Image 1: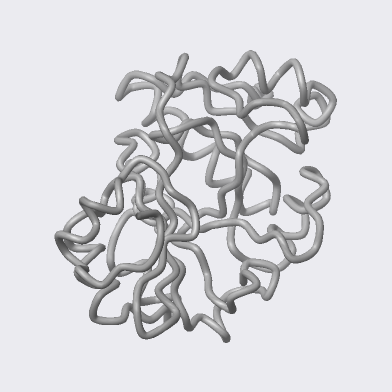
Image 2 (image 1 turned 180 degrees about the horizontal axis):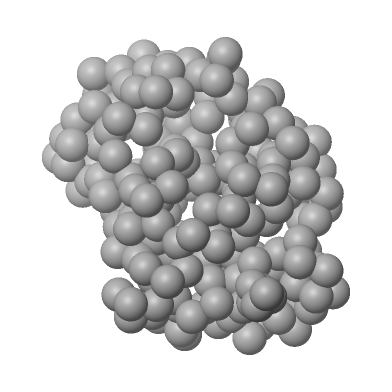
Length: 223
């Protein structure tokens, strides 16, 4: 019986297709996945309690610092019982898929509390990375996401950087790396808190506030 590799090519359509079954099995085992996104390489896994805790342990994530969730369809947001306010829906319609993270209310019965930030919401982004989108659609569920790096080290832009930092976890089979090649440096996603009466920028990023105000004129922050 062949042994499933833990650093897996994830570039061409054929490579992405070949990676899916092993990746879905890895996620079902509540282990951690590294994957390319439209910004940097990310770590993540399934959204159940045990998978989130495995990611917390590997990353050494402190309490009160949640992960975001990546989706690839509006149905994924709906199934999690997350709420899009009117202005959040306008932002999503204009900028998803893309580098915009929305902090949404809801999901109390669907998601672990570890995924909820200090403002009480869950951070969600509809990824625009085509290969990751294909994986998410094949998996049929969202993935958690955080940058693939150790504290104080810049986010990984290649699979080789992840292997250098996390070789032991890869060797034990706890971490599976989808190698999508070297990523092009880009700004992080803009994060908008959609929990209140008005949208509020809590992290400036790839999409400027001026552009966001074309959809939501009374946006707060990042003037």
